[in-house]
Image 1 (spheres, one colour):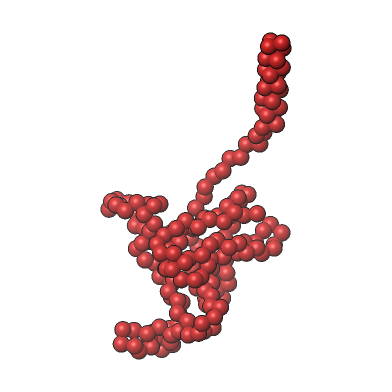
Image 2: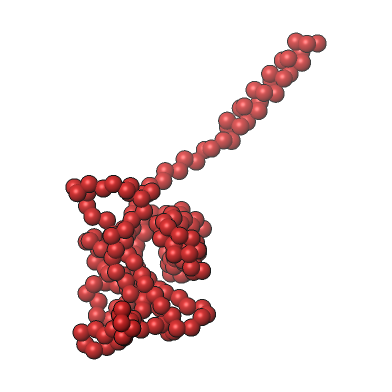
Length: 191
């Protein structure tokens, strides 16, 4: 009786292992990480980054409180984009030698006159395009997720990414909130 039950248990275990092995992971995925944009400013990209915001923007003021004007005499308004010498230490480390290429990040400074639904759009534009039409960055392959290092300033804003699929349909994916202080790697799965 003991030998018969032992054989039955062994047979059941063998059957389970065979079934699990046969129907296990039969599809192998090969993932590759690609950097689409480093926001370093020194890249050889054919485009530049522009910022546009809601209509309740504040004019830029200097330290004396005077409204800043450009060389043409026009008032300068927020948002202002610039490249700053800052980077996420988790990705690139604190100590960088002089032989390493300089790292910069794209910084956006915005200001609004009214509370409410204020927004800032950041989009690439071809450097030689006089009309300033948005340039669509091509993403090669089949995309599973997108991630970006973002410095949060503990404000109640969030980041969305707009993607156009192969059929021409534009999708909005919420990358995450910036209601934190410091650098974070925000990630979104592409359905």
